[in-house]
Image 1 (cartoon, rainbow, N blue to C red):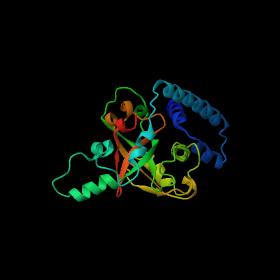
Image 2: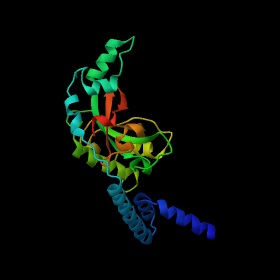
Image 3: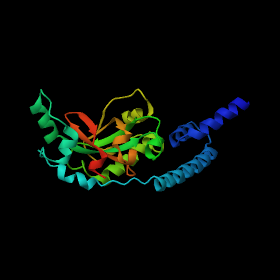
Length: 235
């Protein structure tokens, strides 16, 4: 009996709105669980608010604007930071990549809790699920990005129903061995041309060594590949 009680208590710590909706659909009375979940969500919101205040990490995305038009000059700080020295072979391809590749804003949907904090981290890097637009109408629209990030984050956390076509996004956040790239369009992303995938982020290349407060991490995109842009270019 004690074992069952302990298991139930542990489940309450991780239950989601989706779980309770499914139980209610089966005819179960979940009103007490909803009260407990509402109290837990309130505690989580307060903890998140305190963390935001404690670990403020603003960025200056406008600093990247001079480097967005392509082809960009090889004399720019952006080119020199990302391209490095010219290779012995394939120089023309290398040149084209770093003069014509796109800057994209990757919004973080899911990441380890410690990645948002300015504390000592056990590992040099971490995995995060990020979303970015590839169409010009949405590529640098931060208000749009914040709306979509919030909705997808809520889906991954079970706070709201998973929209059709977004199941793969939830799998990316839920399963460590899921490394697929999910393409989204239509209503869930307000008509944007979007990709969602796992990103490998190095703490030392992030502002102050952890994720920005707004969850937007600029990346460099070229022919299906994506890499982190050094923080010194946008802080």
